[in-house]
Image 1 (cartoon, rainbow, N blue to C red):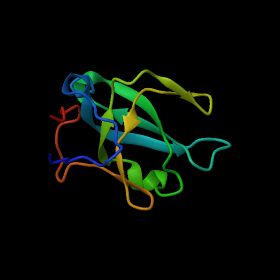
Image 2: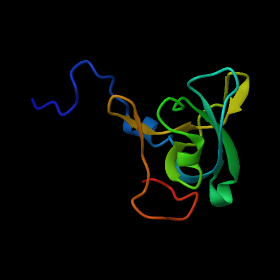
Image 3: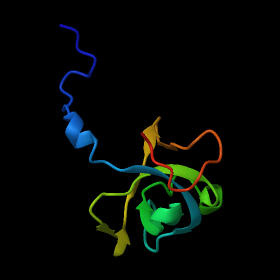
Length: 116
């Protein structure tokens, strides 16, 4: 039998994967979170889906200036979570290459575009 997944990896049922809502959002503001070396507070515009505050643990790898105006991919239907006393209303997706690498479209697209 051919196994295309990593041995020991948890397998997610397709119906569970379909529950995850991935959208492109534009980071309209970014600032350091007080008393944290890791966290940035992002304001993200998802077009018709509205604007959200997302707290991301990427401050050691990206500055606020590098992020403002950048589009990225986010999970927007996670249960909100408090991080450093701030409400995070989603999660930015990043690849891991010795540090986070933001996933973003290769060209400008509409904010709120659905990832399928």
